[in-house]
Length: 515
Image (cartoon, rainbow, N blue to C red):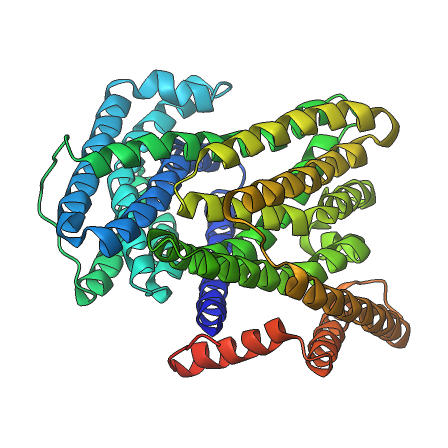
């Protein structure tokens, strides 16, 4: 499990760096173009390749890793053919998408930019025609990331968006004359450099590709069969946020924005911590599934759930109890007044009630994906949306925006229980007792953390006689982290020891052995 902890730490660190660069990218765009026609066009065009391919690319990468693991263990002679055919298919599909976009750019862009005037719309179309070329490199990057995850090389995977953001920042700064070509080439060059970085690392790991597409390959058929349910399941989950916003539009002014901002904070936590863990664990689960080693699958699942609890439980508690100062630090400036702070903080607190269960659901879904079972997670996602709709209507009348956020949390809790029951039916008793014991220790640690954080916040606020939340929040975070770590070490919590050892190994680049 130390290996998982090490890889998770690496991915968390690189993801934080990527997020910071993404934030700098937004600041540079705002500095150069403010909030006007050019920035609006750029934001729309930047999102188009992601909207078109992100869900599909993730689904393909997930299936690729699973089937690659199966072939590596059971039929290695077919491995290169499957790899070649999959890569060729992805390149062909991506080229076709780019071609279709170039042919129908205006009506497609119109879907994303309904209200633009004629001049802004023409600029947006021209910019989008250039930026959509990046789709070819995005497709290759997903394939290379899947390969590197299989080979245990996670630094390059975590840094994949860093060169893209750097090139985008440079091209924005160079576009003072509003050059469409310079602006548009930023993402294209950025993703091309990212692919070059990934390919350089992959070649050292034995990567090879030859243009080949064997449509009769049964493993390619299996990949195509598995991709659609995973893509559908991931897409369905996003519908929850759309439903919340739709109902939020019937409430007081600012409710939709509050739910959106709270979701953004919620999403940063899951992408930095939960996605990092899942990325580290999934190749291991796929190999264990290929060997039909149910004992190892159960152990890895328990370990992943334990690591999620260790990290996400205190974070969800902090987001609940410190929602208002966190939102004030992040957003309270300009037109974002106290009313907006209150609405957003309340939404964040109620979303965060279900954060740990939302994280569990991601982990458990990937356990099923590793066993090439896409049916159960997809049905579970559909149930989650139905439950969310029912709970939304049940709670929105009495709790307004808070009810919408709480509905999402409650649907996560219910669907996680259903997934755990389904997993037990599929592979037998999971042995949750050890995780329950660790969980109780983490609850105690979280309680001590909150007490220390609250005390530190009040103490600094009183000492400095200030209403500004930044310094009190920094003091609260430092005190809380120290107390949480110390309490869990005193309670001999296995997951905390693994995380510390994994962090040490990530920094020193020492080999991580399972314990």
